[in-house]
Every structure is written in C-alpha cells, then in structure tokens.
Length: 187
Length: 221
Image 1 (cartoon, rainbow over the protein chains, first blue to last red):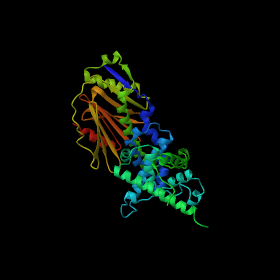
Image 2: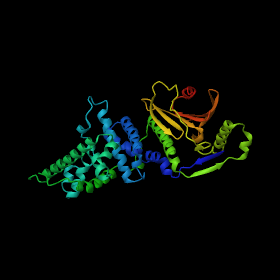
Image 3: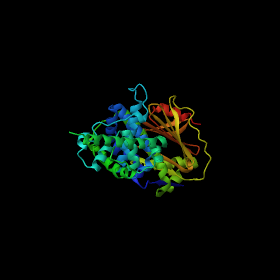
Image 4: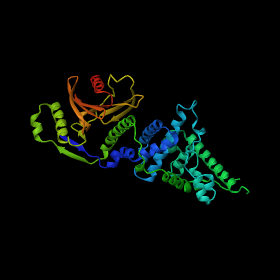
C-alpha cells in the first residue's frame, strides 16, 4: 500500500484568502465605517465583502499590491452601500442609483480645487464623486474590467453597469461645471 | 457650458491616478487597530477554513507529490484490508502529530465509483443546504443557518481520500459512531469528527456542540 503526502507547491495559493484577510481586514473595516458609521454594520460589511472576494479570488494575483488593495476597497465600498440602503434605520429601501453617497472628508473642497491645473482638477473631481459612481468607474478605467466582468463582480446587471458609468460621467461633468462657475464668478 | 469633455481616453488616463490618491488617503493597515468582535472572528474562521479546504482540493491536481512508502512493520501487524487502512491513517497521524495540519491522500484504488450525493438524515433545524462540491470519488456539502454558522459534511471513497487535521492545541477524543471508531477534534469552538467505514472516509466540521455533531454523524447510513 502506498500513501502519498501531497504538498501544496505555492504558499500563496494555499493561503491566499487567509493572507487577504490578515492584510486588509482593518482597511476594509475603516472604509465600511466611513460609510456605515456603525461598528456592527461595518463588521457585517467586511464579512460580506470577503464572501464576495471568495467568488473573485481568480482576479487577484498578488495579495500585497496597490491594485489588489484598490480592488478590495471597491468591493468593501459597494457592499457597505448595499447595507446602508437596506439598513433598518431607513424606512424604505433606497434604489442603489438614488443613493448618492458621499464619503465625508475625502477629496479637496471646491475652494481648494479651483486653483489647480486641469489634470489635477479632474482627478480631484473624480475623488469627490459619489462612491456608487466612482466604484464602477474605477473598475472600468483603472482596473480594466469589461462591463460584463463588472456586473459579475458587483452582482448587478450589465445594463445597470452601463447606466452607472453614464451617470458617473455626467456627474463628473456637472461637478467640473460647478467648479468652473465658481472659478469664473465675477468679483 | 463646460470646457471639459469627459472621454474614455481621459478617464483611462486619470481614474487610475484618482484611485491612487484615494488609496493613499487611507491610513496604513498597521496604523488601524479595531478590535473585532468574537462573533465576527468566529464567522471569518469558518469562512477561512472552508476556503482552505477548497484551495487544497483544487491544488491537489497541480502539486508536486511526495511518495511515502509504508514500512513493512505495518503490513505484518494488521489483519485484513480494512484494518490496514485504519492502521495506516493512525500511523500517519502519529508521525505528523507535531504539525499543525496534515493532509493525507490514500490511493489504493483510484478507479471512479458512482457516488450518489446524500447528506446526513439529521441536520439541526435552522440549517439549510447551500453548497454541494463534487470531488473525485467524493463530495462535500455545506450547510448554513441565518447566523452564519456552518456545518461541513464530507464523504470520500477511500481509494482517493484527503483528511485535514488541525491538531495544534486541540482536544482529541476517541468516539464511536454507530459502533465505528472515530476521532473528535475540538479547538476554539470548532468540532471536527472524522471516521472511516466500509471503504469511505467521513468528515464533519462545525461550531455546533459536540453532541449535535455526533447526532449528525449517527444519522448517516
């Protein structure tokens, strides 16, 4: 009789999920708290985010890198907004697209922005976008996912993805128009 | 009218920079120090354990395999094929008991067998069958309740079984399941019950009390 002992050849493969948990759990809780402002709900958001991450483990190569950190943060933001919508404090469930959730404290104020050059202006405008728009824009334009892939990652329809990208762009234009008006207001 | 035209090219260029800026505003992981609740830690431990099992199963196909040839001493001390299998498992456990976890694969007979997926007759009331994972000559069923508690049940033909034992700081008891010898391993509120019977390896992992785990095991026919 022969007994084989199988060795996992790559520690990262074996413990990728465990490593993700240990590397990002505090960051995820921090982001969830920014949106939910409730420790119990924020922990719930982190747990549900990890369930979503399991379904997308194949999209994560290296655990310790900015790209992965960005992806994890996006998942956490999306999950947190979902929980926010459905939380008991709200009498009616708010459709996702009607939640224009701004994370307080992030991004410069309008007055700080208007002095900058155009590129920084647009970057800051993007950072000031509502989270439910910026998550989709980041997945598409920073992480390079297709609309179909984004719909699978976030668990929403492709049509929904297209709508949010469209609305995100429109919102961005409005934000920039708003800044422009402030910039060129007669003294 | 805005002088800004938001094109895809512009977004491909600037959204990554915006994301970088947003990520740099988050404090470093080591600077954050939230103390997670016991409930959260337990839920995550179960999730991690389940994922480890999945990772190990999927990795088996692409790993380097080290052969261990059993010493002839074992062959002379057992009678019958069933006893040989049990003895071999016990000896492997003894040899590797210092490790925090061991993975065993026995491949006496690797031919495919038709295995009908049947769960235990008894599962605690509030648990629902959520995931069924088919393996080579075996399967794993995952049951969950509303609180996120979990029962993992595995049945594997012994001609290709894998057993995972996390033995560091664990309490290990010899138990009987309908007269068959088994091992109950308890650690941090998680109970794992493993036994071999009639050519199959059985494994139950859960946070439900030991008595309930035994009840689930005894309902398997």
